[in-house]
Amino acid sequence: MVKIGSVPFSHALCVAPMMDWTDRHCRYFLRQVSSKAILYTEMITTGALLHGDVERHLAFSAEEHPVAAQLGGSEPADLARCAQLVGRYGYDEVNLNIGCPSERVQRGAFGACLMAEPELVADCVRAIREAVQVPVTVKHRLGLDSTEDFSFVEKFVDKVSAAGCRTFIVHARNAVLKGLSPRENREVPPLKYDWVVRLKREFPQLEIVLNGGLANARPYPGVDGVMLGRAAYHDPWVLADEGRTRRDVVLSMHAYLKKVLSSEVKIRSISRHMLGLYHGHRRARLWRRMLSDPARLSRNDPALLREAMDAVESSELRENANERSAQVQAG
Image (tube, rainbow, N blue to C red; front, side, top):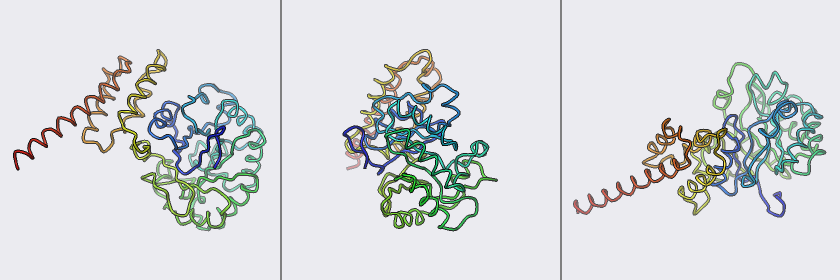
């Protein structure tokens, strides 16, 4: 348990960093669904912060808290400089990516390939910890390629925890560095949840969070928390607070759009994250169709959200009334 100021938060429920998806608009939307989940940025490379547009990468809304910035890199000094930037922007956590298996990331000598260099990862964690006052966490895999030796990940966690990392987010698969795409790396290597539970038994003093293939936000026995990725993106209601309604979320997002839409910020860049809000609802297709309609999107009008919500919910009311009428007549 850590704190945002005086407000405690835990890693019991987290939403994974996802490239091209978990931007600031997506995170704002997910925060309207869940007040508790820790939200993560897309992975931000050290090069992007040191030589790019810092504001574009790090700016976020205060409503997003608790929110963590995930960094990708392998040079301790560069990571420390980037962590200082993250700290200035007010993030609640710095997460180090030791799990991404893409060839582009490997060419940069960071991501999952760093699991083979736990001493270097430990140096990176120390450098980040010295640069910020917030927790430093690590997201990693269980092993590399065909490794089937628990001691590999055990030694990695032991070495990195000695550098001061107390929270490990574990994608319960190996990373295959050659021959599989990033998407295949999320699906092909077998899941080994029992190994993650075993890590918690071996390191009871650490916070161990399970990631990979999870379809719901229920606690998983034997670990401290769960991190959902695509399941939460495609069906965000799995994260929903008790008592929250989709109408509540739509109205909050309508107000948000009225604040942020401009000639630079288009409704499409925000509504795309909301397509799954009515997932599983009988009128989900109508919701998606209206939010994807080019003519409606071209108006860049926040009213689109309310129009789509009213269409979905009024259709549901009519269908329910028709069903009740049919039942009365049949009775």
